[in-house]
Length: 435
Image (cartoon, rainbow, N blue to C red; front, side, top):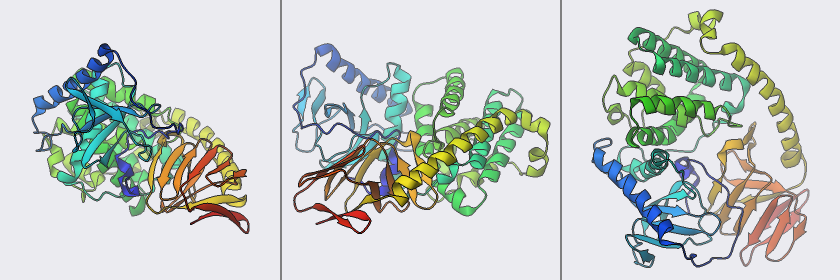
């Protein structure tokens, strides 16, 4: 499975909590099978309209639609051994247990695939959006975005940075809705001012940029090619932003909002602007120059009337209340994962899937993920009640084991299925995994 830096290809990772035995695909009615065929045809047709112009290369490629409960999948093409079961123009089989299930791009069985979890949206445009996003992750290394690294955006869980991110998005919405070009430019300028204030140092700027180059550009590609007209595009961007505000954390999901907004606005000014960026581009600087904006933050940040345009009072109140809850939550998590005994599992050949919507960064220690599935040389770890992933992605910590057996180790909300020759033992005040 994939190394940590590839995790940026995830749209919405969901820990696979059901460690079921591998099963043969169930029998489905012809109606169900044809619907998957239509899913593939819909994406293929919409991308044929673009014909490779958006990135200079064809985007349509190998796709797996996977049922996370049964591990059954449906593919638009066969594997290199031609071992998948064929049904009309599509193929089906069962995904091995060693592969984590997520919306992502993976290398498997001699090919690169875009994996999408079932069930899919009933809305055709939404389905196409999701699949095209994942297809871009197959393409990105071929169009200048290779080697993107996973960097820590934990700052986006704190009060001040969340405040400025919301203000930035409010300003971008105002720009999107404005019919006056000068007012639109002013709103974009204000959005970039809030952005600059949030990106207070190079470390933060670079960390955000890495995720925006990866997930942000993938989502921008998807919204531009999934079949929306101008009216639908505006409606989608605004509703997506409003839904985003309901996320418990913004750490891994902000790029799905910022780059589609900036990108769509810039597409009206500079056609195919995406051809002018690559893995070395800093998007904050790029957008400032592309929109021909000189930033002057003092006037905006000290003007309550102008801040009111972007719902400052409401946002400030919401984020202040959230901050109190967050600090109390961190206190409890530090007790669980820092002060109390834990089991430490060091990664050797890690593959991982998780839900990024409710993660909690803890200072320099790492990030707590509520659900997670990890595969490694030592076995399979399934998390349902929190685990601390180290900041450098080298290891994961779970709470003290409550049951230790030869093949199975369990604790509060977690289960470790050990491979042969591995065992868990106690070392002073913590538990470790050894071979």
